[in-house]
Length: 580
Image (tube, rainbow, N blue to C red; front, side):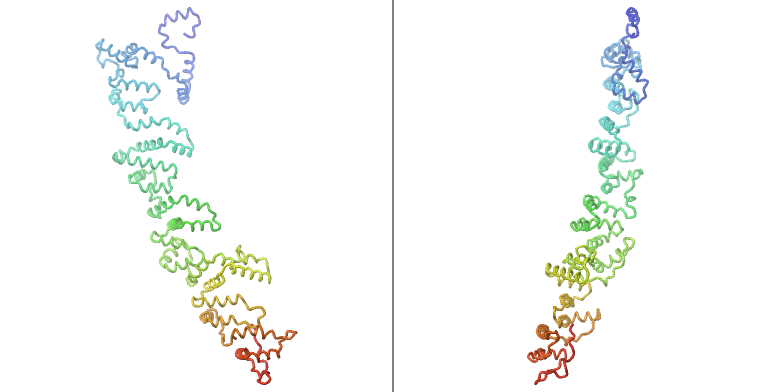
């Protein structure tokens, strides 16, 4: 018709085809149809979505507007019934003709009570949905009489399943277009109701009823699967949180999935350690994720990590417990392992603890399958006071005794000096350290005594003796017996030193009294000539005038007694003083 350009010819053609308008297509429609039928399936689907005109059925629209003609065509099987008016008209025609229902072609006249279903079914098909689409299946499920009339088998899916799939059709399509895993997780977290329903759908498709589970068990397993899937949005499948979640399952879901070969059992994952031990490790990991991250961010150099553990004993215990179980420490020994590792590594507290816990020492500490340690030599473990003093004066001891490589030590500060300059500077710094830390001088000597295994009974003697030696002989003194007096007054220390260090015996009777020593150094020894030589005459006079002094010299040094008349010694000057 559109190709006829002559008016008379067109008028004649219209007379021959009075109903031609029923099949009219515009040029646009014709071109679209040609393009549509030439396209592949994917392009056709896109065209149907973007060009609504392609879905228009002019014949159906005309029949909807003309119910009598719709009924006439349906009566002879040439069309479906599209409206209730057409249905009523068909019933009138059938009655007028005296026809029974079976005279009507099949699938033309649905049960009257299913008429609305019939129209919805036709509309669903017209919209491009297949007979087995979720929408169509739901129609058939809700109207069993209509389903039987159409000759379809029973619908296997449930109403909930079909409604859920219809509800989330658009969301599923959006999700299907996302390829990136993290983006998918983010989408799921932002659409949690949809995500949960999709996991219920997944559980539904397992057909657990065919595995012998009752309705209650299936519901419980389904909801457990929903919880599990939500957990996986923020946790890896083998993460501690997920493992613990699985371990607490009472529904049987994960046992069933293990049987299906979908996942490993917890026992397999735990391996040789055993599930009981691995559950404890998972629990510690799950509860300490934030603290573990904070600890791991600290430098492995220096004291940062040790200080962090010291600031949180609870976390330190958890960390040591996990470490021990991972290494294979038996569960019955794990608390001892934690106690041992809480002890600071400096000093000898650990050795002392091991000596007091022989069972742990033999069964765990020396067990090379757990960790390789050398045997401890408890004979070299000093008294606990050694560690107490070190803890009390840690900074001061490090400064005083630190090596030339220890930054902050006295040795480090004087490392560039030599000879007398180094000696003077070292003494200056040591004295300054003692002045600034009252009590450290004696405690430093006590700490050294403990390091040398000096027995408690001899400690005070050690401190006094080496304290005097540190001070040294006073400048200008010829006699100095302060150290010998300390040894004389502390026999426990002296006898121990003789036995342990092999010190020679001494005759403490030959030690002059302090009064004699003071007078000798300050008055007697300075009696000299201008050339520095001893003034014998002056000294003899001094002896004669100081009888107690003279007697002490005779007793200790064997001076010859003075003549009563002249004051001259008998037997010469006697032995020379060995000034120490």
